[in-house]
Amino acid sequence: MQNNNINSNNEFDIFDVFFLILTDKWLLIKIIATFVLLSCGFYYFLPNVIFKTSGNISNINILLEENALFTNEEIIIKLNNRLASSYNYEKWSSNNKNLSAKLAQETATNLEILSKTQTITKIFDSLEDLEALTSYLSHSSALTSENIFYLIEKDRLAKLKEEIAKENLEKLEIENNIMKRSIELKAAQEELNYINSNIANEIRNTPGVTLHQLQLTNFIKVNKLIIENLMIAKEEYKILKTNIISDNKEIVRLGRISTSPFRSHMLVVFFGSIIISFFFGVVCLIFKNEYKKRKNYKF
Image 1: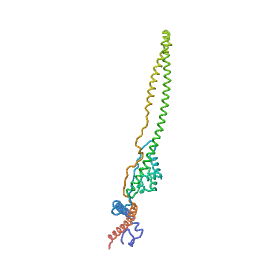
Image 2: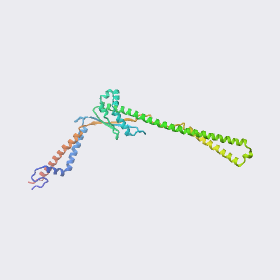
Image 3: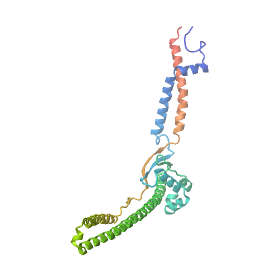
């Protein structure tokens, strides 16, 4: 009797095929992988020779300028809202009538920038379509930048006004302090002059009057120094420190644009090659097994 892995009656059934697949599963996987790689590679690298492409796919980067008022996510939300605005599309189309014929309003208002990657991917048929798309994105980005720049400048001016009001209050307190100490200084100087001019030497040389003279002299010196420092502090407020922002108003702008052929049938080729290569691999396994049987067959 013949020894083999197939039924002794040399007939195949579904269980024999299943057994073959399990036995040589790695060979089957190699056949499928090779066939898929060759099929997809042929479809990808020879689109203009054998296959026709369905258009082109473009990936556009959106560049965002960092600022202290809005996060990148908030800026992307503002840009997406503007892209979805019908008024924004009408404003753009009125200035770009030729390009608006290549970009319908429904398509334009459904555009969306991905917040995570800050990119937009779009399939187009011709370079005119890509030109219309980038024009609409540039238009929307410029208006969004102007709006954000206005809000940033408004916030800066509001903070500047608060700073000016605070500094004016501090200056007023300094001026009041200077005035108060000047009055006290003048009174101390007049009192000291009166003692030196109108009181006899015998009385001035007494311990009580001498001590009072020393106190007045020390008070005058200290207050003069304090008034000088207050005057310096007052002069420093004339140089108001403001937060100067960049003259660059392009908070949002288009970055690098990468374009490549789009092959809409790639998935069909991929899954089709898997199915075909599977059946082809099974047939190869059957022939391999039959070859072994015939080779080992003894008359």
